[in-house]
Length: 287
Image (tube, rainbow, N blue to C red; front, side, top):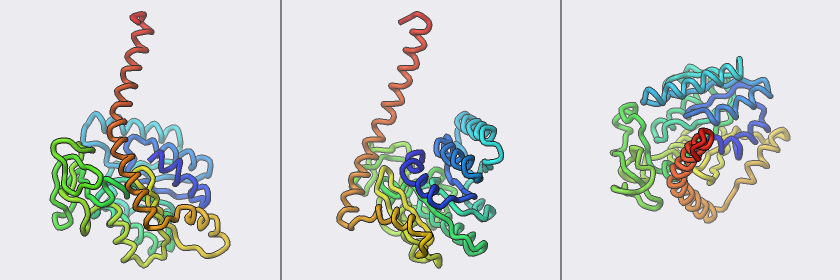
């Protein structure tokens, strides 16, 4: 999410100057820090929602990160160790929300419906930004904890790899092997981008949507504003307008990038680990 802030979200926030922000899904807080830096400069506040890892040690490390951020940015951060549903219905009003939590149709469309309820209750239509609308989870559900999803809305799934352009799971091999994926890509009620598109068909809110095919893909939903004050945002959105034929190619490039990133990230982590070992050895006089 750090990339989404730097390339997309941060620019929109600078244009719209929100004061009450919500972040759904934070992992180890890289994106959270970016948002809090904005909050400190703009006298804004952030509520972050994340259930944390199911692994106790990882969860402890994550909690330490958010406790540290709360100390570093006093009065700016409220951290909720919880799932977004049904907590989102108890949070509001807010004027901006960033959604990057569970990457499946049911969770995302219910999060968006919660945002709509908040907007209708408080008369505030927020900026909505959603990550991971591209491959691999734009058209394929991913379940961190399948039991959280009602059975009627849960795709048949198992832990196995995926490949761009291939509907069936790949086993052995493939990319993102550590995730529990829907058995097949595409079709009704399957994936993050499908949830966004289905929400736009049903919502009573007057929204403009842009799908941005960078990295894992980002959707930006903003309230329609045809007044002169909305001109900067309209210009920003127009810069991300592509023909349908262009979008198809861009989504393919996005998928290829994510596949390569799935390979390169562990390699880079290992290189950094070895560098740290070498640095310690040199400091101890062994190299």
